Length: 514
Image (cartoon, rainbow, N blue to C red; front, side, top):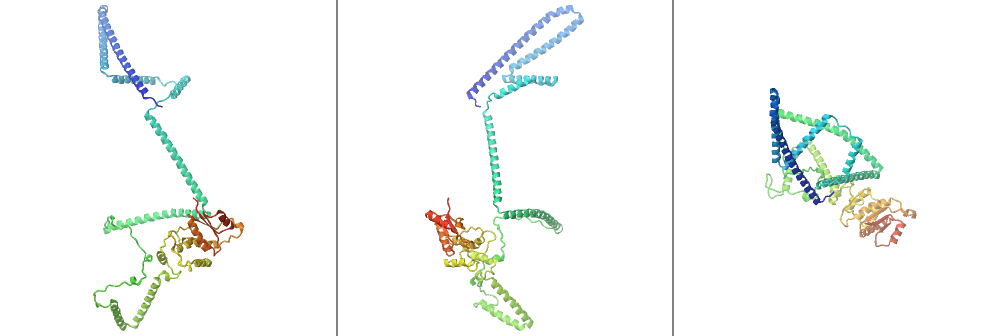
């Protein structure tokens, strides 16, 4: 509800005027009442003085004494009352209108308290009658029906409350929608999941729960025991050996953050160049060597000299033992030389993990994922069908490219792959060869009834030009194998494309429709 400011100002001024007039009236009434009381007291005193000699004459001596005492008491009482009235009048004159109003409020509060005490003393209040209850209810309804004028602060507080309630309701609605969406997505994933995969997943989760429960309990117990044993040993050492507590080492900014511990088998940096294998040693002046003459030749001559000397001094048994040792050394060296061969000098069965790592480094092949098969070294070694190998030979593909070496084995396992390579690196053949191997195992679409059921493979391309390039490659590989391809792209008559599709095909190449 809104109220005009002018109406408010007028109402406030009227209230102030009424309060001032009521205050002036109360002052005038108090003054008049105090004057009347003084007049009455004076008249009462004059009457008493005039009556006192007559009373003395009539009354005996004892009565006179009693009367005098009573008169004295009355005079004292009148004086006290007169003093109180004077004090009140002085206070009323000295007090300001605000203090008078406060005093009046106090008097009213005292009166109300006295009345309440009196009511409580009398007893419990009697229950209201039916008519009184109806009248009370009617008054309350009328009070509620009357328009209530709210201040600006109250209106702002109510608007804030309403805003808070609306935001809370919206938040609850969004949370409910989010929960419903999550439950719906979980149900959809479970519905789309393969039943065998679902069973495996549930079994795996059950086993993990059981193992984790048992392992956690056992692991915690073992950790506690090990900690207790370690603490006992440390306490014994400090007690009897006087062990010094080590200070906590603070790591500086220039310290190394990582410490790599490489395995010797992972080292793929062995150089097969003899220049780097047999490094030249610097010849210096030393004991037993002559300057200006080849150091290796000098060592060789010395070894011959000492060898001849040892042979002359050795017995037959020592010579046999030396021959056995030399044979073992030769075998070991031959084996080492055999193992240190380059991967190109080894057969497919002799390849080790280290050789495959070197192979990938040589062709800049990097992979991410689990259980990735080994790449292809050459077309003949890999187990591809003979008709596919003939087509590859006819197309002029002598050696596979890096993307083909790694992508074809993954594609033949029917696994998903994302291949990243530069333009002209043979990406199309990398996914076409596994596709052709799979299509050749399926029956050919010859009957008209089966032609409407659709092709075996669909290749999607982002642009028309790329779709045409893929079509050229598929025709190059597919025509000798009798595999038909149809490109569904723009710029070619729809009737021709529809006719070729109705006649039947194994591969369809199409562009994306956005």
